Image (cartoon, rainbow, N blue to C red):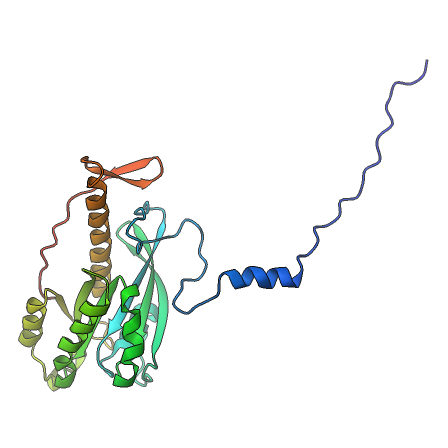
Length: 267
C-alpha cells in the first residue's frame, strides 16, 4: 500500500524588508519641519494643555507647559533658568540673544509636566522679536533686580506687552531677584508688594545664586496653570452638560472641584 505521508513543501527564504529609498525618507522628514519653537516628537501619551478643546490628561500622562522669563537685561533670568534646570549658578552668564530655552520634567502633585522654559533677551533691540512669541506661553515670570531701580520701573512696560500679546488670562508671577545682595537693595519689599497687588500678581523674593524660593515659585506657577486649565475645561463642559463631570479621555469621566482664584500677594 502506498505511503500516505505527504511530501513537505519546499520553504522559500524570507527576503529582508527593502530599505526605503533615501528620497522617501527625505520626503517624510519634510512633512514635519523642525522649529525651535515646536516641541520635539514625544510619545503619543503626551498631551499639550494649550488647545482649549483638548482633554485634561490622566495622572499617568505627561503634559507640556511653556513658561517665559520676561524682564530687563541683567536681572538674572538666565541664572534662574540654569538654577531650576541644572541646579547650578554661574557668575559669568552671557546676555541672551533673542530667545533660548531649556527643558525640565517635573512632578507637580500627581501630574507629570514637561516644562519648556523660555529665556528672553531684555535688550531693547530684541524686544520686537521676543514679544511675538508671547501668545505661545502658558505662564510668565516677570523678573526685576532688587539692586537696580530701573529694572523695577520697566515692569509696567513688560506687563503691557504681556497683556497685549499674551493669551487672555495668562498666569503671571512677579520675581524679585538677587535677595542675596540685601545690602545693595534699591527696591524695597513694600514697593514690590504694591506693584504685585495693583496688578493681581503673587510676588516671590528669590535668589538664583543662593537658590532661595526658586523651585517653590516654579511649582506655584505650574499649579496655577494646571488649576486654571481644569477650571476652563469644567466651564466648557457645563456649557453642554449641567453635570459636575467632564470628559478626560474617551470613556472616562471625573469630578472637578471648583477652584478659588482669589490670589494671595507675596511670599
